[in-house]
Length: 307
Image (tube, rainbow, N blue to C red; front, side):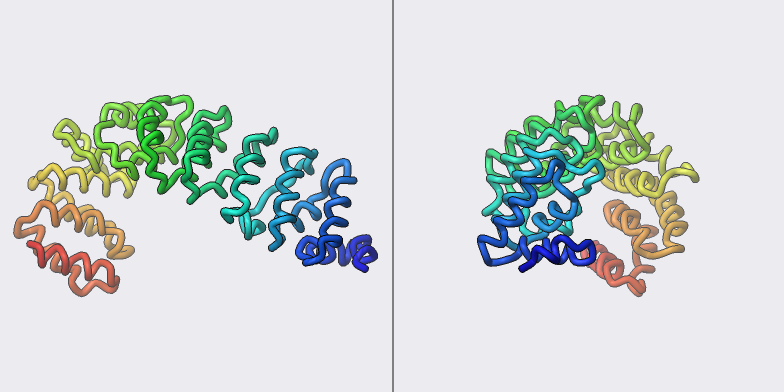
């Protein structure tokens, strides 16, 4: 019944989607056969299968990804994959990822493993952290967010120290696992970053797990007018954690400058002042009691109550 609609360019995508979502086994078999007869599976067929609410259709789509030539410009949209993270499809997804030859497709699918933390998935994702392709390494690390694997924790320092394979997403895993003894690695990253963002990540780590040796660095960043706002926030928090009360006035000056756009921009500085205490710090935090931003009013209330 749908064949004439499949043959018409005006109704083709609608008809293909109807076949992929059909409760009829014969309808879906017709679509599977159509895909199998194409030399290069068309984007329209692939999209109909991937967007289907039928696990059988999604399984066939995964099979096509690993066994058939794909269109040159085929791109996988996460919004087109309503079932891909379902537990029932995990084995098929993992088998497909392990057998893909297309690196671009691999990087576009790894996100679907996020939230799955069994040993097989974790081991596979860790193996992809050293993949030759940077986008694959990045997506693998992103997919490991929230995974508290002891194996991953043991691997992170070595991965972070490898400047050739390191991606920014590794940093989030280090913070999640609360690895607090990697200062020497982050010092090198700060001095030799791949990007300004990676340099900011290094400063964030040093400002989180502080050592007195970094006090002068925090002062330098905090008092540099052209420093990135994220960096000055990390520096202020670092000085707060070190208990450097001499930094109160400098922190207040920077926080007032950033506060012009939004009180929320000054959150890190207010937190640092809360660590340092002192009358000037208290008076500055008092100015946030009536902030137009609820989270800043709550932060000020909590800090002052704990004074």
